[in-house]
Image 1: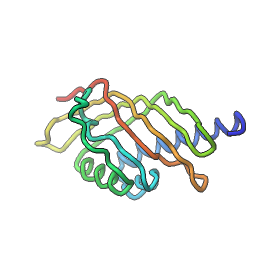
Image 2: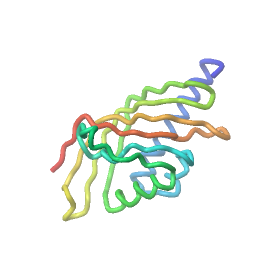
Image 3: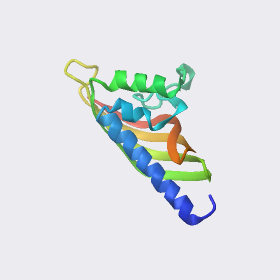
Image 4: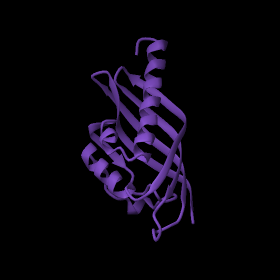
Length: 151
């Protein structure tokens, strides 16, 4: 980035990208959801429902936009959700690369008979962004949890 204005504009574009992520997931717009990721995006979300999971029991990463959209859509389809991102710490590394950490709050409610009646999670998204053809996209995403409340 050559100047303060360009940096601030890039940060705002990334904030809007993340806002779309939350809206598209909660409204289950999987076509739109797919468009916010790079084709080769990397996802570390298998333990996203657990508070401080055991690193020795780590599951493999999800590789690729299509695989992640399939994972998210199949898991979230029956669930009513509300996801919120707060207090972004976005660092612009170059004209086309950035990183960000977002405080996370989410509420999940499965249909009757599900594994829980209400899930509230608190933690962080750790992300890397890439810009191509003037569009910022999420290139990698990892969720870490600080606290989970389930009933």
